[in-house]
Image (cartoon, rainbow, N blue to C red; front, side, top):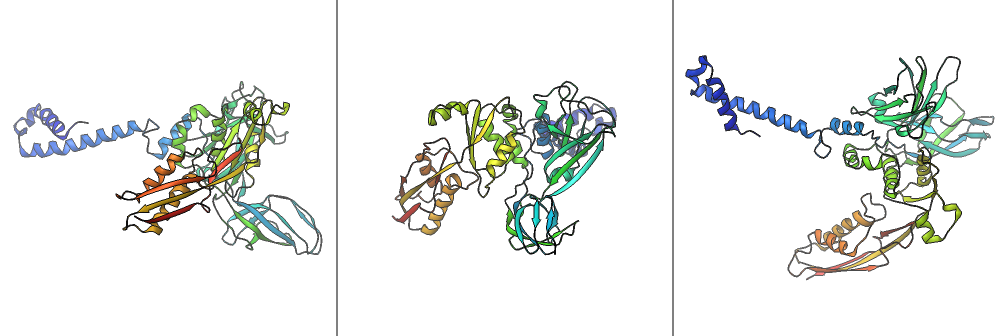
Length: 463
């Protein structure tokens, strides 16, 4: 960066080369003017340098720049996840009641909800419990304006921000029905006549849809009608039991109230997460070759996963013996607090990825707790209750079962490092000792070891 003195000197020499300014070159006026111009020059150079830094992921700060890096790498950030739960439907009419899934409901504050199950033959006075989620359906239509390779269009910003999922249907002529086209990431394993599309994400934060080029994926013909059915959600919301829900469009003779709390939704991937994930996107790119790729894939698409693992037939047979069932099979397990449907969500996601004859099996995780006994002495200026709570918080953040920042690999030396970092043992006579009860090393592939804070004892006294 040029210094202020260098910039001012350069300006005085430049203006002094002009005949009309020669006599004023050494004047106080030109001196002040050169200082002012040097400020403008340095500010412009600083801005140029800052703009150059936006070209690199590691130094990019602007949201638009990070999104542009994502768009260049065909990165698709995690979408919102609807809050889910159950509702009780009571038939208040005089005849049998039935209605399909996806019934539009609304809470008192206008938040939209959808039922996820069908109600079949509910007799008067009877009740049934069905699934419900915080979401709404919208249909977006688009007419193909020109027949060209990689034809694409984007959804509006407000739609993209609330997007949980979508499906694409295409009507190629007025005589045809709408046909469901499939998602093929990066058009992998697609042919010239494959009715597939790819999804992309723009630097404006919009979700887009791109069709093939006639070699990888079919090209929609001009005039074809495209219908995108989107599921929108508010993400992380909560609706408590016994809350009444009202019907939006229909008027079935029934009452609908929340049975189990509708919650456990998830927010879309943040800019900070996106920036970190982009460093490794060239390795992953949804090709799913190594075990770390599967765990990355699961955590990126499903929010709330605190632990997951993947292994192949060789590792499985080393543990349980040879079986023909294990050939070309990937084994998966994981844990997300309060998410009892994690297995179905993971297998559902992987079913949409073309993986050349790979099969998947979900293995129920085994949870093995261990505990600590921490005995120590602190200085007399230390509040023992505060110190114990600080130690518990620090350990829970890294090793408890439900911590979103938990560390999978456990080393006893790290317990000492974490406790020392609280700062309560810096005194001359302060000291502590850690004893581990239980094993911190998993003995099975599907085993998750975690620190049980309820049985962990911390015994501090004054030195």
